[in-house]
Image (cartoon, rainbow, N blue to C red):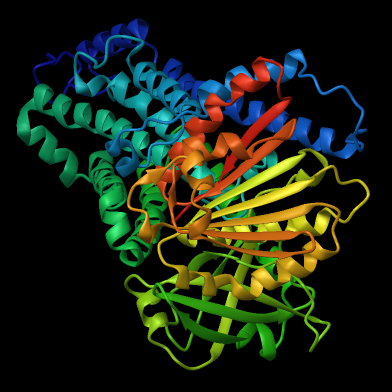
Length: 588
């Protein structure tokens, strides 16, 4: 066998002179070990972004710690840093306004720019070096397949970490995992594209080297092509069932299938790369990060929730109230040591309705002690009926018990010590994220170090009966505002009678169609109109430092983003020091 020609299939190892000469020439042209560096380059790339946003987060934390109460006679003039930030915000806040962009749920231009740059990086990286395949498949795996394999291995820890309820990236950057979810989907789709590029040469090259029989032999001998095919099928399933159209219409089925396929992906990847050089190290890191997240989450839950049959095993006492607009108001009585921050969410499970269903909902209240029991808080959720669990919930009439997983959410900055006025804008059930923030800020306005003077809440609803969703919370806001140094203004816009958007001037002229409620520190006005955000918002922003918080449909968030991007001109012209925007995820 020493002198067999390459045309003989038996000439497939270094004992054959012809194979040895061809293999050495192929290695000299493109060494196998050099392809492993592509995994490191991928790690360096996304580590740069994590490090960058970590620096931003640490800067904000440091600034918040040393922030002192500003004097009322301080110079209200934007610095060069604030003007530079305004230029960046005027570009990064913007969103596309076309209907297809709302349908696709496209993020802001700033995030799109990062995703576009990442797409170019991952698309170009595997194709930098040539040749893409070796002259004969017997000489080794195609170089482009090796490069894609290393990039996929390097992306796997990132893909698994991003959706974790408690993950290292959120701890470093302060960005909630709900906002990281779009990056998780992007990385997963790129991983699938790279898997496709990785797979094709592994199917074509064996056929070119020895025909279809050669490929069949690899499957019969259970070579990597067998495990790779199963792994690629799982990748396809993960990508296919994650398509927004499918995910939104069958979320519960998607969730179960996604978890099953994700576990299958890790297991099959372990089988596929077993015995390889370097690739298993990335898988070890992936499993380590996942296990750490799981343990921290378990500790997090055990720290917050008392262990015992009255709590951990049976859940917490829960009352249900069905309200107009297909809304169910859920009130869970939780222990006093369970606290949460405004804007956070929790996963709820009601074993009496479904043992497996575990759904996330924003907490529509803030932790306040009740008169009946000083060691108890009321955790409120507003849930709109759709299909599945929420539909079952809307038809249930009896009280039950609820298991709580959470709360979850990012770090909350001391907004009351940063901004002079804050405008909260909500659409429909987006009020669940915005109202607790308004209540929290109203409480903070009674403190000495607070510079916040006005909290204005703008809520757009279709029917005036929807006010019953938050009637109890409105009374709480009145009580809180009465003891604060600032003002809380609630503007409710009932849009059913106003099919066409109106401008700020038309709103002011429509006093005959408004209902006003006043109390110390609190003003509530009900308008029967549909406002145009781009016209209304500029008139509401008056303080030298202003923040707009928004939660609602994509179209509303698009209007908010573009309006605030345009208002950066006020900072550049010296009329304001800062105008910032923060939007919350609406839906899952």
